[in-house]
Length: 463
Image 1 (cartoon, rainbow, N blue to C red):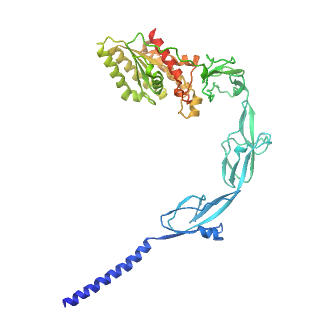
Image 2: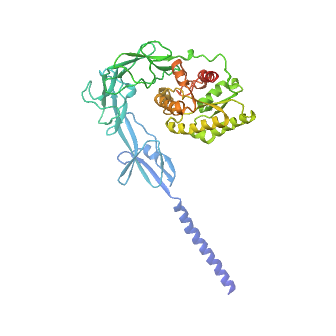
Image 3: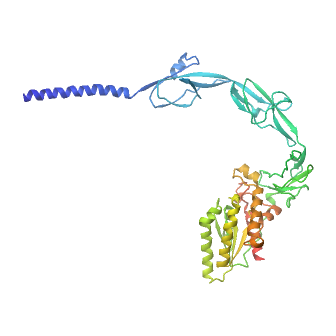
């Protein structure tokens, strides 16, 4: 019986193994699910060998690249109908396959949307668009000259009805648009050589201001004057109100070739140690001085920083330097601190006033420091905008500096002596060319400008 029992056990084991292999194998085949992807014409018919060649079988979850297809004058899409939804894919797009799928090739006729000159004689070819019927396009900016402004686009030459730039328009077929402009009556703003640059309307009820200018060459437009050909001392700065309803104003242009470095690196004479404290502009001064910096001049500076960095780290760094000199001299050393923060957080003018007041009191009382605050120096907002260096305007700088004077540097609030390098540069010229690297960002200065700022500060201290 034991032999028979053992024999039947072996048979039984083989039956179980066979069943497992049969059904297991069957399940393994079904687990590796295959998906068929086919491509057809707009009617859903696989009509040519090309469509048949495009068909493929892939594993579920695989990505495929839809066949590339183009036809002149048409926009083509692979269309996939999924229930009530119709999905469009560009030829060549990637698609993840999850089930058997059928794509149909749809071709939509492209129509030309053309933009012409006011008299209709010439097309602005660079502005031409192509779109399918029913699609929406956005009307572009209206071309105009220095003495007129663009009002919008009409569908006929000098049409009375027009749509403003930025309006979305539904494409109905081939379409033509013609600019509608209006002559501006106002003040003529002219280039350094007298050529008309722009007319600013003065009859709109608003109070127009003198704009900032990006000359694109590294030369600096300091401001505006009624006198043609000036290179320094503008009558009006960017952001100032235009004082008349008509007349001519000329750019005051300070050229790169005009800027001269100081003939010598001036040394502080009335102080044993002078500290310049600030952001990337202060670092730029340090960099421009390099090994020429006098031994009694030191820096606490870091780029792209402001009040928060000074509160967290910069003040402790400054305090450590001041304390060391104070202790080593047994309190006899005369030290000066020049703060030049603000351009990176112009909106924090109230916080600067309250915090810097405490800084000045501590350094004056406990370490006998003379405290100076250097103005936030000029910016060119047009250059900043072109370069993409954030938003800083001449008006914001002026407001910040006025607040510094009233809350920290005058009358009963005279915690600092104010060094007005801003007015000095606005009058006599400055260049924005970061470290002389051809970076005209409207924010950082040429090496010569940095050295002129340094020289002006030391002159103030040496008086």
